Length: 422
Ligand code: AMP
Ligand code: GLY
Image: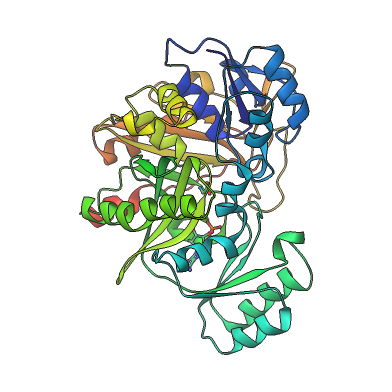
């Protein structure tokens, strides 16, 4: 099979690394990819939204399967474009990607189908939103409706902070059109967990659970990022709770989408909070998580390409997936200043000395013969181990070999689980 993966981050690098384990997979292309991806696939110079050029490339190069990684092309209809050109594509259609593309949509879906989530109200008028806000108490959560590259959520600790976030979104339009509508939501408390599932209509095949670390600094301090590290499994959260999430959140969501005429196929990602009153849904994403993928796919023992094909062909109900008992930990190495402004073009050294981990590239670029930084999140170092503690040790030992100017990373990835188990 010839495969084309769309995207340029650690998620796409991991998908390609996993696909390459299969003897069935012949040529792998990536658009546009990054320096790390170019070491295992042919990178082609199209960006994720150049649908016409990508369809033409796929036809000319006998591509058998396209995998769309990020949310933006999905929400803008990438899979619809490939399908219209007769090219099999993995990912939800535009109509189904709205589950991530509009928070007002996903919140009303949850309400209509009794999927547990935080209390909320949605507004298109600033005055009405402000009025509602003043009847609530802090802490409170303000969310831009549309895609905002992971920055559209403010967990406001004070009423002033909430007012400011609302004004930024609705009056100053900091997130452009994404802020035309806002969701004001009750603040939930508890441990977070991500469950990603392959979905094809009403069939749901959950992957192993993982936990992300969104804030930039140790101890969950500082502003939110795209994710600074992950681990899987999540041993301090019991299988009964994982099962509850699958039964009460993921399966009903897949069914609800079918009932709405928005048949979802691809990866459905549930961001969950384990509250005192049970599992609640924080959000749905319409794709693999980044960096959740970096710890989930390394634990998959079945062939990823078979699962992709089953979803595309509508035969997921015939698929059983096998998962390794090993634990995996991914530590993200980020540029100085991230998630704010950061420099690019810093020389990355020592990658060849890493032995007990896989390094997935998130933001790297060749400059002549040199590997350099090209993003906020630069690398994800994933290590496995028989236990979570061992995986954590392997990841941190391995990253000692790697260096670039200003490199920052969290030193406490997986500590939450390890402390809870003590
Ligand atoms: P999102 O961009 O939707 O992934 O949200 C970013 C982060 O904001 C989540 O991972 C949570 O940590 C936090 N968050 C979102 N909604 C809530 C909520 N209702 N209560 C508490 N925290 C939340
Ligand atoms: N790691 C969070 C996300 O992919 O949305």
